[in-house]
Image 1 (cartoon, rainbow, N blue to C red):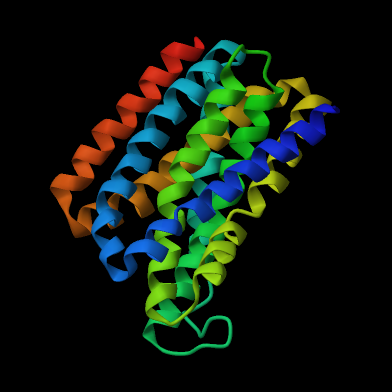
Image 2: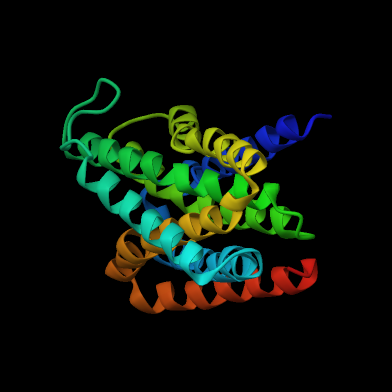
Length: 245
């Protein structure tokens, strides 16, 4: 099977993982909101460890500090600019009201944030480092689950059915396979882009944690969020050791 097909399938799998996050909302309804803080904390911890062990450390072996820093700053700037350009809250999929507006805003934020996550997958896939692509793919898939919960909750309150919640959650991650292919093709064409691409993905992911995931997690149940972050970081650390990353 061609490498690009495998990459597309893997990155599409991370998108489907976002839909998995909607399942607790099917089963628990609004009670699933109690899971938001620990799940987002888990995702924040997992993404932080993945950014360092799966992106920045391999980048340090591939390029100079200047290249990594340039990519990192570009990644931070990308996420910051994208968030500023998000349109104001509006109705969503034919529905109006506060919950529909909240659904629209969460969808847009997650959709924009999915692109750098896809870039991380494609960059890791282009690397020759053993186990790295699997590690990053699993890291992105794991952190996508609570993102699916966060989009499904306001949709449930707005009256959307389970299947609509599931597929809209998956749709927030459509940029991931696209970004994965873009990054892979770019690095394959210009091998010197690898450390810059690693730095870009790490900067974007850590910015998402700092300005999106961590504040949302801590705003609900701080203790549960911190516990989730420790568990998430521990899981990714153990996975890193198991895969030899």
